[in-house]
Length: 275
Image (cartoon, rainbow, N blue to C red):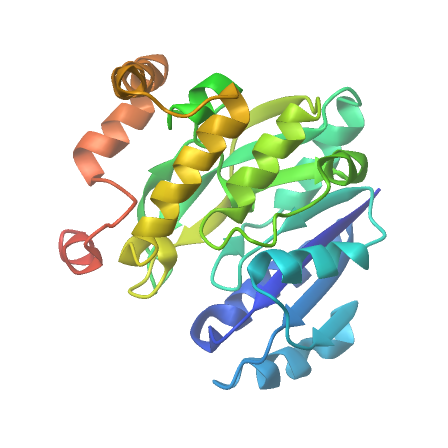
């Protein structure tokens, strides 16, 4: 079973080598097709990619219309039965893709599988755990369903039925893909294993909150896509209730949130100082 992994790269040389190495290390146990696309980095990223080019299946150096366009371009070149994508500042942990392969072989009825993720800092120190949940469109619409993107993998046909990434989405292209796959009938599952490190650093979207406005627009648009209507005032109450229910179902997630803090907009200086 071939697994195709796509990484889009743009000016994250500080972390890129760790990302690439974490994927290439999986090749000893799994048939991995690795595709790296760089839209025009000027910080030395392309030199790092060239260093590993003999071990990377496809390298594309060309401009694109944003992250979603780059990912669509990458998967258009993929030949695997299973797809996944890893941002150029995140990492896969050893044997992650072997576990993914085993699960898909044993569960042919499942289209999308998610593991959990460790939230890591610039130095690979673990800040906290993040638990993926089973996809529920209703809960996702109310902001109460977490699916860790670097620990999520899906069958080729599920991606194709979703029609791929929305090129206009610049804040949460992964979340919209998962919603589109669910709306297209994909069957999701969750494994209680930690497969990736999701990195927070000063310029990452999650830590910096630099796309707050886009995120608000995204949340409103996705709500309407799922429910077929705009958000109303009463929906704010439902969001609170569903988010509370999420923590009741997973006390470990509640403990991580209370004891180690939030993820989005996290103060990294304070987080590291407290370790």
